[in-house]
Length: 270
Image (cartoon, rainbow, N blue to C red):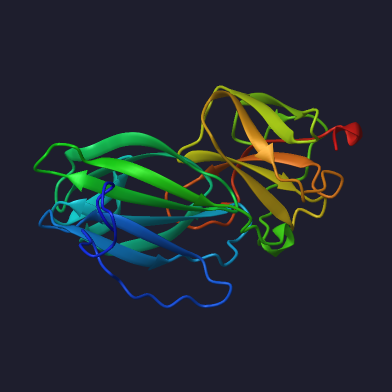
């Protein structure tokens, strides 16, 4: 890599760097600063393997002139002691998190917090870059799509019989409604409204088969009205039940078995 006004590559700012590329591989090369602030290059291999239905893969890469950091989702530390140029990867429920970066062992952000949407069936790669000394630390994101797996592979949870309308299940008084909206290009979203939110953890929306064994997570919601994308390969005739579960913060992607609301979509919705 040379200066933008260089006549040739005889005096590179970075490199040359030799890399090995495998057929069918997916890679990212970065030009960034090392931990001491010197220009350098990094070469990463991206994981494009499938993720379970309802899940998303998150990778964090430290490419900033800064000491080791912790990465937080809300108030929870999800990556500890990450140093330049290392990376860390985890699989999590699809949804939106408030991401921030703090010096290792602290919770005072040096970057963020910033809302980060982790879509189902994708790999989101987040780069911490810039310079702590220069006060320009920032986040950059890269998203790899098309990593969906078969929704039938998600283990089911029994949480009571399905209802004809979206109603609260035993022990809850929440109310809600769910509507499938179709765009002109065929894209579908589920517009869901939940009132009197009662979840002890967080609320996750599922499409469930009539046997209550197979299910597909659409993502995490709060109270009020939310819109969730329905993937093109999901057949609503096969997954007509809308379920809102109460999920603990335990990192387990499977339905908790505790449902706050449940109802069945109209047969014409698909």
